Image (cartoon, rainbow, N blue to C red; front, side, top):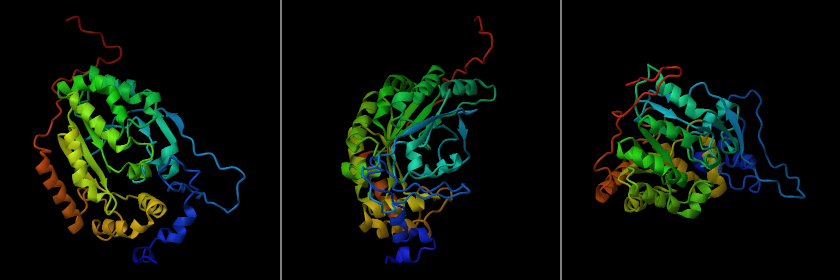
Length: 376
């Protein structure tokens, strides 16, 4: 048995325990997570498993369910010192892209749901988001600063094609000249170039495209319903051609699985038109430490030991270190090497030579409901 797994304090990390949790492949076809263990706040625990009984027919793949949520506010605030924004909007809870590594998965426990398959199949759409946003921008207490999208779940995930919540919110931000920064791995962001390009011309918009790998087969395994790597590069090109500043995010860098691609991803993105770049090392908060092990054992069992060994090397011997500044970059020799490789490649390619900055100078506060319009 692997020394890493054999010494794990959590018995759920043992290979035999992981195998028991993994659901049949035909049931989770087109999905990222391998299991659907109960959310951590639930009093009663459930685990789906294959009991060995044969089926006359193959089970139906899990369908996506979307529930309307009626929030009282739409702008979320944070005071984290290691991220460059203090407010964000998430049009959706959960994400149909199904990326197995997504650090937002544990947030589904707040809805009484699993961070596994529930996170990518039982989604929530925020009703009236555009109207809520306009109301919050109109508040006398509101002071403008860039609003981030994609900080938790992807605003351009597949269900956005139908619900168009992101589109509606962008229309509000454009109307009142409010700055916005977007992170996505979806080609659907190009749909909104007609809004984003005029905003970018006034210093009001920038977009970051996440590229984890250039290997289409590996991308399909890791991110089953996200755009292919080639489509992401094409999206970078389309946005850049439209005058929208584009950043490429090599995120997450997965030790021993995607770390060899850093320089190639940066070069391809630079050729496509990206002018800035960033990266994040694989993060394993809460349920992610189990979900990532499950995925590796299911898809790349030969990589499991090496991946987890390097993860622990960057987290002081633990699966995760939540300290600000460390959680996204790690520390130690391996993390240092990743950082230097990234810096050298960016310098060679001319990335990050000039940072695009968003401005609040053009912001025009909306009129409050019932407020009489000025005659002059």
